[in-house]
Image (cartoon, rainbow over all chains, first blue to last red; front, side, top):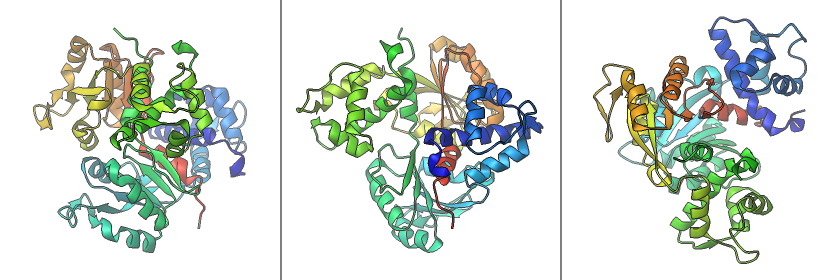
Amino acid sequence: MSSMIPDIVISRLPVYLRALDRLTQEGHEVTSSHELGKRLGISSAQIRKDLSHFGGFGKQGTGYKIAFLSEQLRQVLKVDREWEVALVGAGDLGSAVARYRGFADRGFRITHVFDAMPEKVGRRIGEFVIEPISSMQRVVSEAGIRMAMVAVPAEHAQSVADQLIAAGVRAILNYAPINLNVPDDVHVQYIDPVIHMQRMTYYLPLR
Amino acid sequence: MSSMIPDIVISRLPVYLRALDRLTQEGHEVTSSHELGKRLGISSAQIRKDLSHFGGFGKQGTGYKIAFLSEQLRQVLKVDREWEVALVGAGDLGSAVARYRGFADRGFRITHVFDAMPEKVGRRIGEFVIEPISSMQRVVSEAGIRMAMVAVPAEHAQSVADQLIAAGVRAILNYAPINLNVPDDVHVQYIDPVIHMQRMTYYLPLR
């Protein structure tokens, strides 16, 4: 089934899941494609169509049971379990990521933090002791970790990615402002605030 | 012209620009859609088509002059100038964003950092003195700032966004893990690492 679902649909499912979690926190138990759409700025038809790829999660007119739909989406996205994640780079950004508490209940747990600078190795960030990048490939491989976040300077990102991939990592969230060359079976997502900002300035009228 | 260009094309232009800057740093002066495509994992045909929306930046067979193409893209994206940006939230993530040096030469300059916590107000982060959120609307409005980054807890993000919009902000980069409701003339981009991670787990085989 999975190969049939367009990637653009997959990209929206985590957004739906986040909105459903929010609705639960607010005390709701049932929602509708209309309500979700209003919250997300997506048409309700689009939401119904996206969800129809995975079978009927709700009945026409009665809305969606939030707990059930959330659980289904978690299964589809495979975050109904916890993924171990290696974080590489313990600078300002890496440290903020290491301390971020928003991963745990959404499917991810950082289990290792690596840095290349000898003076950082052995220091603590939150609950982690920073490990040397020289042992990264062995540690990641032995732990069977398949996901990593890369928050190193741009000039080191490709080399770090290569080592992670050699260790068995198949999904990388790259914070470094550079595109990575990876094999076809490795997934990469990018976070670069400037890219997002530049996308918006295009639409702003000049004064 | 601008209303004719699909948003998906606009979304790729900052990525092209970043790759061109990288090529320049590496000492290149000329590139091709083929080389760019290989670096970015995008087909050269797609790149030529995207760039053709803005007129001919290069001649068939002779490649692109990087300096010229970069400058054209900067003009199209309106980052051939510097945009003042307000940053709201001086927690772990906000502090990392405030210290990030990658904005300056890509069109953006953070000029104010706001936080709601009285004990943070007046403290320094890098070159900034944290200002109280209570004065945000006035300060942003008086400075004519039209872009903001929001790095506050999810439960405060909508209220902060409302105040920013009332002050004249028309583009928000939202780090809070929640969708914002904004008027049609306000642009929002989202950065949520979990969303990116969940997009990738879908494609990872389970063991």
